[in-house]
Image 1: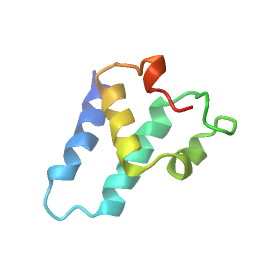
Image 2: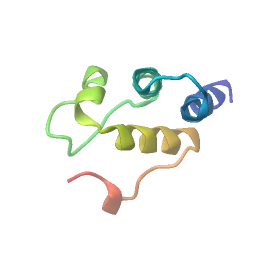
Image 3: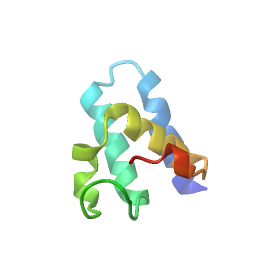
Image 4: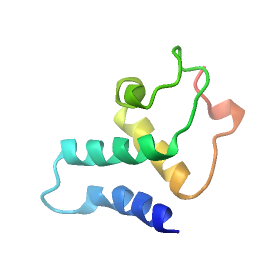
Length: 80
């Protein structure tokens, strides 16, 4: 539950005053690096260092939300 709480805190950081876009993106990517353990259909081998190069801001935030609520994407939602 502690890790889920941290994920939710990062999701809510977007609503805090004075937080920059860079801080929001860095916090999002840091949490994704902690929880994402692989991928498919991304055009390159898995690397946590590649997350910020492959994902848009919206995709990163959506993935963070899915992780926080222990959900997964259906096959139809995955990147081709």
